[in-house]
Length: 55
Image 1: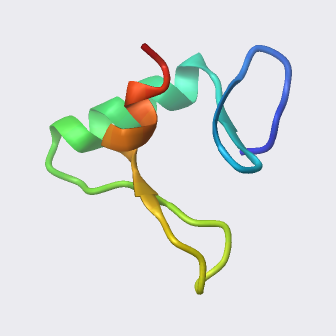
Image 2: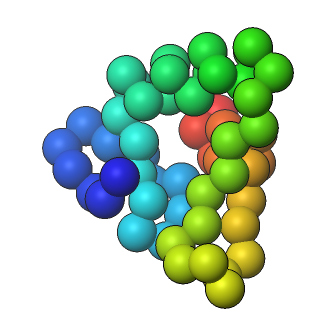
């Protein structure tokens, strides 16, 4: 999920496009918890936190 054409950055080295946004929204609406983390020891943030950056 690195920077590409037509993406929005949601965190360090993490960007999403419209299809990925729709997929994460679909998962969360069905009760899944989506987290982003670069490496196991790094802090993480949720899709809900990332979604706020898209508004």
